[in-house]
Image (cartoon, rainbow, N blue to C red; front, side, top):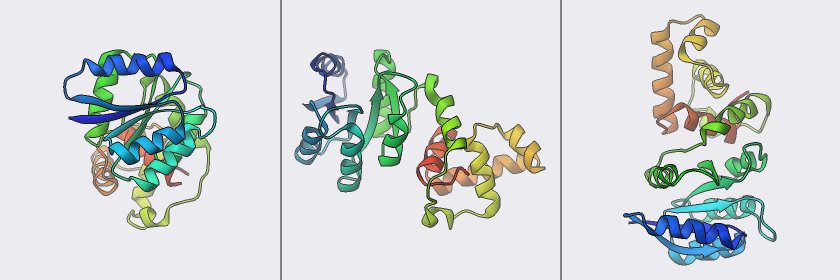
Length: 213
């Protein structure tokens, strides 16, 4: 059973999500919170697998709550929820530790799939905003996490940077003057070293740890 905590400052949204998840086999809503402080306390008490986290809330907002939860309860995975596909808050949420994000109008089937996948260690990013993520990764500089960087060769970092920009293997091969097969091998090695299974997950890590520049 996947235990879920819902955090949103709008009662209609909270109850709507509770109703949707309440009919899903294998998912149990163990608490709802109206702000980040309540969410942290619920996580402390219930130890859920996934937190559905609204971002722009009064008091302790979703960014602050995500950082506290991810630092204090590393086994809990936070899935950010945003209303608009241009919401800049989501990038701060990723830096704070969120493992993915969805729009609040995501269909029921997509929401359930995202929760199940997030609990299993996957990353879900709404398709309509994935391009914005890649653009943000390409254009913003953050401090590099040297612990992760030290595990990658110079060539692997070059490949990761281009993956984070949204380039295909063919485009990466052309830019780095490598064969496609060689690029595929580099990408597979990167996924293994970063502990991810797809390019979006790799881009999120590149953004979070300053490896996209």
